[in-house]
Structures are given as structure tokens and as C-alpha cells.
Image (cartoon, rainbow over all chains, first blue to last red; front, side, top):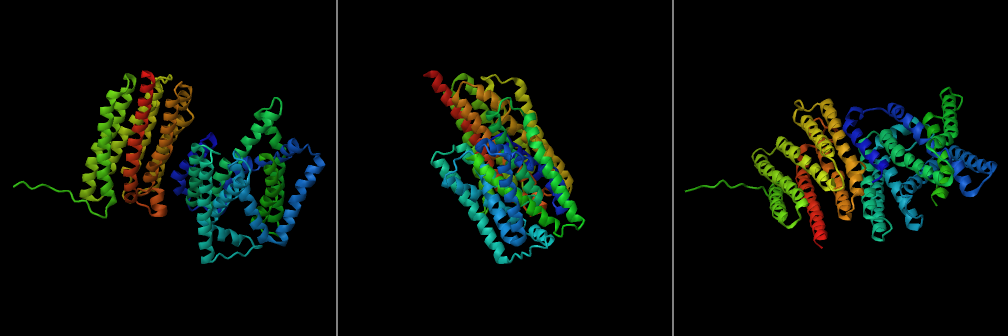
Length: 296
Length: 247
């Protein structure tokens, strides 16, 4: 177990012992609680994609920004044309990305990639299934969608969650049997998968997701990025790392606030929740590609 | 004519079954550890004695808990916490004894004992002194305090003083053994906060309807695995180190 995983477990235990006090917190208040953590840790973990990609490919700024912003624009356009398809693609890309960052210590061969996808799908499907009522409520906030979740759909979701979880565990232990990971790693990953599901099941949806996203995903990726840069750059320090993260973090926060303001004032005629989903998805696509190259 | 009171164990009562098996398993483990003291070197005798005491204290309590459960059908909360308040600090003592050769100071021992007593006393107050029907705020407050004690022990075993001392030890057996005990704390002891949250007023009780009766079975099984398993790890270290010293 590393320190990040320990922090996750400790934070989860504390939240679990107190969560009865905020079980009925509505989505808006959950977002207010989580916003600070997502802004301070969630956004920055993707704020040096330009540096990471340039270290790998020595790209010129113009080429990088054309690639990155181009993908963002294409993604946004897709959201307006095919919102439901974009949502599904976003979930699939996110699943792979979450799995990849969780298992960055194994090689990205076929088994590895399958594990990344299964693990990520397991936690995303679990998040949706355990919080179906909240998802339906969220959907009502998004005029652009009109998803109705029938009883049979929820049953399918349930079995997909179970299947992806069991397959993920099977692959983890297969990797142990093949001596690709040691027994401690296999045990801790199995426990963590269970704990993440338990967190998504017991905690309110946004709080549960923030706990995973901030502690196990974003902080972990930032540690990996820091370690990589400290090896590849001279006299690298935490201060220098923060200075690298700051520009695009602040730009992203400012950009989001402007867009949210335009939406709230009615200048942009889309729902706030749709805007939020679209922005997260738009940035996830190029970020996932950069991280795929980084981890390779 | 002498009439004997025969304890009847219902066929469909796994909790009663595990109270009986738990009691006997702990007693057997105690006898084993006490007798095996004679086959290890001097410096390991104390560790095995402590292992034997842990399981013996648990065996006695399980004897009484068995009777209490059969007579009332209720969770023997007070007896459980009395047992844990004695045995869990003793398990922390084992960490100190194992790392003593690597330089553990008496301060470590007291810190671990304090954290374990805090964890258990807070848990007991939260569970046993809960107002009728279960008060959520009472449960939450004492639950958080208890969890802090648990997290401190977990940190010490995985990253703190115990982990560092064990890493600095020149014995691979001790390193591996302390790591295994750290796993016990992470996985084995997790049953206790889960059980706490099942009591009236606890979140698993009010949120999901889980009751403390549903976890008695898991407590009994987990207790046996934790205590006997803990002792067996210490025993394996003692035996391996003794063999190494005599070689």
C-alpha cells in the first residue's frame, strides 16, 4: 500500500463514520463541497499535458495546441450533434483513462489494456448503478438528454457492474499468477476496488466520486508526473512543479467561470449541467491521449 | 440423581455455533502457544507468552459470551469490548516486541497502547452508551474518535515507526512478519468499525437497516482469524529466528 492509497482509505473511513450526517445532501451542495478539491487537484493533474507531450515528442507549441484544441473543438461539436453518443464515448474514454492511471505499473500490452478498460468500467458502472436515482435527477437538469432508465436497463447495469468487477479481479489475480505483480499489489488492488465500490454505494454520488477522483486518480497522476519531471529536469522541485501547473489551471478555472457565467445569464442557451459534462468530456479526450503516450 | 444442564445449540444458529468454535479454537491456540514457548529462544518467549495471553483472554470471554448469547439471543457488547480492550493493546505490544531488536523504544509501546485504548473506549462509549433508539450524532462523534485511533495504528504499522524499524531490521523474517501483521490490521481489524456502524444509530443501521445481530457471526470468525492468525505469525517468526540462531 502506498501513502496515497492509505490517505484514500483513511479519508473514506472518516467520511463513512460521518456520512450519516450528510446522506441527504442535494446535488448542488455536494458540488459546493467537492468543487474546491476538484479545482485544486482535479484540474491541475491535466495542466501540464503540453510539457509531458513535448518531453516525449519535442513538439512545437503550434503543433501541440493545434492538436489539443482541435480535439477539444471536435469533441464539443460532437456534443451538439450527437449528445448521447458523446456521453457514451466520454464514459468509455474515462473508464480506460482511470484504469490506466490505476495500473500504470503494469505494461500496456493487450492484457493490460483490457484490465484498464474493465477496471474503469467497473467503477463507472458502479457509480451509475448505485446512484440511479441521482442520475435520473441529474438527467432532468439536462434538457439536451432525455434518458429513461427502465427496470430492465437497471438490471443490465447491475450485471454489467458485477461482470466488469469480477473480470477485473480475475485479471488482477491472473497477473499475479503470471508473476507480473506481487501478492501485496494484487491484494491491495482487490481491496481498493472493493472500497471504491463501497464508497460509491454508501456516500452521496458527487462526494464518493470526488473522493476517488481527487485522491486515487488526480493526486496519483500528479505524483507520477512529478517523478517523471524530477528525473528529466535539472534542479526540479515542488515549487517549480506548482509553477508549471499554475498557468493552465488558472486559465481553465477562469474559462469555466466565464462559460458558466454566460450560461447562467442566458447568453449560452444550454443547461449548466450539459455545459459541465461537455467541458469535462472535451478536455478528457486530448488529456487521455497525452496520458496514454506518457504511460507508454 | 444429578441432572446436568445441557446447552442446546440450535441447528440453524450459526452465531451460537461460532461462539462455541471460537471459544475452543482460542483455547486450543493458547495451549499451543504456551507449550511452544519452550521450543524458542529466550528473547522470543515473551512474544509467544503475549500471543498465548491474547487467545486465552479471548477464550475466557468467548466462554461467557457464548452463555450470554444462548440465554438472551443478544449481542454481548460489553463482553466483546472488555475482550478487545485487553487483547488489542496486547496485539500492539507484539509490534513493539518484534521491533525491539531493531531499536524500538518504550515510547512506541505507549503510543500504540494509547491509540488502541482510544479506539476501543471511544467505540464502546459510542456503542454501549447510545441513547435508546440510537442517536446519530452520538454514534458519529465517537465513531470518528475511534477511527482516528485506528488510523494512527494503521499508519504506524505501514509507514510509521513500526514499518521503519522493521525495514531497518537485519532479519528478513521479522520484516516479512511485521508486514503480515500490518495486513492483519488493515484487513482483519476492518470488521470492527463495520460492526460499530451496524449498531443502533450507526450509519449502516439507519441507512441500510443492517443490525448488530447480523455481524455477530462475522465478529466471531474475524476475531478467531485475527487473534489466532496474529499469534501464528509471531510464532513463525520466533521459530525461524530460533532456527537461524541455533544453526
